[in-house]
Length: 362
Image 1 (cartoon, rainbow, N blue to C red):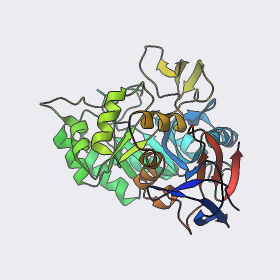
Image 2 (image 1 turned 180 degrees about the horizontal axis):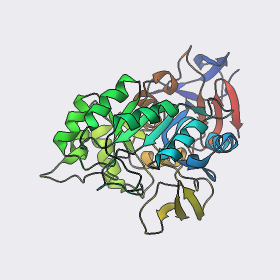
Image 3 (image 1 turned 30 degrees about the vertical axis):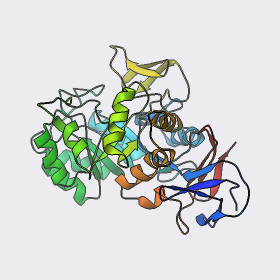
Image 4 (image 1 turned 60 degrees about the vertical axis):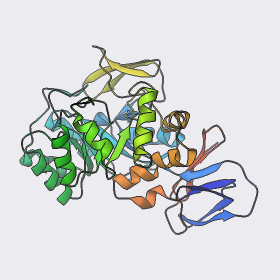
């Protein structure tokens, strides 16, 4: 099968020519033939709380299917359903409800955002469900379902021990919802942590005499900076700063909630009622509570901030796949999986392909 595109992103370079797919794999790139649009590796989103009316903390198989269909429309071909801090029984039930396979994007596992978070940097997370590091609780959560990524606060007593346990079980660790100092963050990075959750948000602020976790992450070339580039969570000047310091290691995430793709209204985020107004998502008390962002909009916002298109596309695909140790999902290379997002010259999604099968076609 030929895609009929004019170029494809291959290892960070836009290669002119068409792309062919055979047996669910990329067969060739740079092929002769006129076409339209750009073929990019399918978008990989590391933080999706919900989408199109579905909140993943309470979703069943039909809910995941419906959300997955809507995510495909935005070019997301693989993602991590994300569960915010909730009582253990609710989290365990949600983990057990995640389907092993769906007809939509690949579900790469679950992102547990908590419960081992700083009480000083909870954002919209529940104080009552927050817990101090507890290896027994961690084991119960990991045994309940396919946890692939966990966000925790490294400054908590016992957190570094949890880092070791998580890495030993193949779970990626991200630092977030944290009041960590630079020294505390560096200690976690030295133990093998390689990414931070929605950088700048729900973490100790960057100051000239107190660089904190943000300063530590910015100066570490081995740390990936996950960022919500929606014009709300980060000022465009901060996005330009992130790009100036961290080009090539910035991963776009949406932190999308059930209201994403639906517009203004009232929705659920676990047990919390959230309201979407003008693409801004807040709790009743005004605290930001995730986003209504889609990955194509994040991509366009990053390009508008000055990122070259090729590297911006990698921030939506290659870099987040690398965070999970799945680089094959972030590349278009002969012999690799045919997970492809095709965009037009306005960076709108016109086609989404998973495993060589077209799931969305404009």
